[in-house]
Length: 317
Image 1 (cartoon, rainbow, N blue to C red):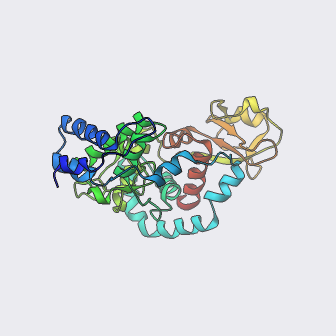
Image 2: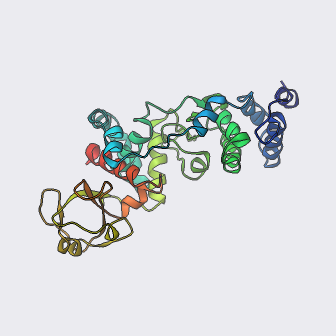
Image 3: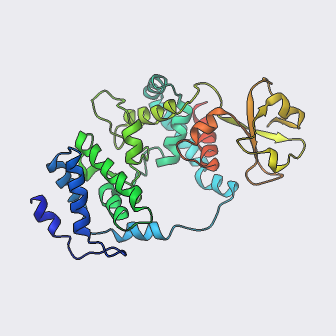
């Protein structure tokens, strides 16, 4: 089916702003061809979307409003079964992962942590066509310009031949594969771990490991340094003195009553760190270091970074 005929089938479907879906896709096709992308690849890709996907729009428009506490989030994403599965898998893949992590200036703790949180170690990668999802959100979403850019980047990925259009699957917002990269992150950080010349974050575990390690390494990960650790507070610390931006030496924190979780003093007093106590006084507290902020480059959430750190350390330390 030619591009003109295929795109003509989309007429009559309009966005809330009155735009026509067929005209929208024709515009995407024209922009992709102007970038030098293959017409046959673009046509095959856009054939993945017949009309705006109502399930994608429903998920986008009805995201839950409630806010979890750290304890609720921790219990949800860090069940004992996830640690058990991670340790079992690490015994199987550690020999492959470790040299890949080292090659990209990373280490296995954070690769295992991100892999586990993002996709349950590859078990949950999403079932949406990335092209369909991104086109839907670019056509009628809350952040149309952002998703239009991601859609064009997804077409660039397909043009490079790393994955076939019907195999480019992900979440409803376009996050792809076992690493859950958006197309822009893929173009910047995806890496070939198995040496086949492709960057396959969907089904090649070495490529998944390489891509996560490359992301972390290029964002400044310091191998073999801690991301953080759980601590105990002998004395209460004002909330204004906490948070990842409020760094002090561990010696200075000890003078404020901060100790290791076992109550012992820190072994190095010169290291700079910050104290987080997400749920407030009397709850779980952490000392976080440089690598904690690097994890936040993957997802800018303190809860996310804590979960990745705790899971990875519990599996690969």
